Image (tube, rainbow over all chains, first blue to last red):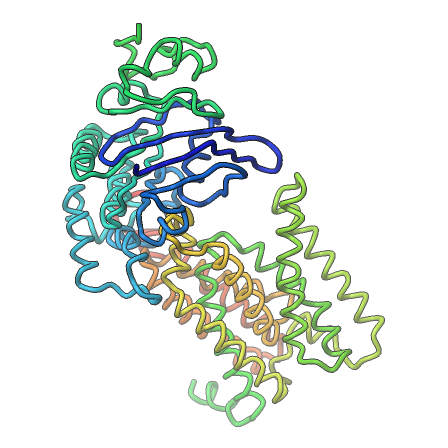
Length: 252
Length: 280
């Protein structure tokens, strides 16, 4: 298993963010993580990246504890680009190079192999010609691709993506969907947090429904039932919550 | 012009003042890049004020003043972190509350300890009267701060930019957080030698802010910040010599002047920018 999470509990100063959450994901799959705001999606990501320590439960990534998996560069996190300071004085190239830091020595001086990895990654997301641009001058979609390139350069086997399709252009959306399929064929496991159900139907093999705990997970066709979605979204009809892009295809 | 620059050099105390303020300026200038990018300006202000009781106690006990200052600098940071974590009060409020408390304690200690401390020297700097042991301490502190910032520059940059990624690739972000705060305490101690507690936050913020307006590359930003900071220190000391006015005031005024120039004239991020503006 790529990701094994067993009965994870996370609480912040006494308020419970996640309880008894269990999840097993195999190598080579695309999994949608679906839930409302505050349902614990980002908390689960934080637990998988080692940012919060679960008060109970066990997490294994590639069979390793989270700290070991971090040292092995196994987990890459692709942030929402809104959470990044866009005035930061660094170039696209430098951002992608940050994906290689874990493989470098203490001074983080790039070797030839690091430069090749960064160049290849930029090529795959079609940003090579913009590599010298400051990160803040990129469009939202380009910025998202830059962070995806960082995850590629890191050669992580687990990719965690936070709302990757939020506010991106059509070209980026298409390119990212193609890349996710390639990653799956390369044996990577991709966990995508989203509230847009149409994307999940379009290309996720598996889906995890979450509301403070894992309500259901498994094959998308089996898990995406109206009952499960009603549970996830607190009884509201999911076609009201899935955003305008999917309004033409209701779940029932 | 050359007489204007050279005459001050005929006095030993002026040579010492120029060297020390340039050194401190350079180190604080480099650190100021991280402070402005991380958004820690208020933290710099807090730490620099909170060292006052440490300085007073160290003098009273006959210890190196930098030791006392460092202990209280780190102590204030730890107190801020603790109160923030254990209460519902927002961070900026906690910072304001803690540093004024420490500063007030320092003021009371000054008036209660029998020593020859001159409060104005601590508050407003005394670089013209700097002693040999002060110079030694400042050299050591500056070397330590510069070493940490240069060795860990890429990790610290990543920590400021995207701590989540840093953590996910196995970098110890908690360690970096406290290391940067410790370095801040040390730099505040060095800075209070030249400009004093009240104005040291300028050394820790203004050069970074000036450089940030001039470039979109971190390497250039750090070089520009160091350059503008060293230049401000040298010019400030010389101007204060000729105008017979507060050295700290002159140094910080030159820094502020350079910032205003960048604010008005910076090619891409100034008010009167030239050419098209790309991106926010």
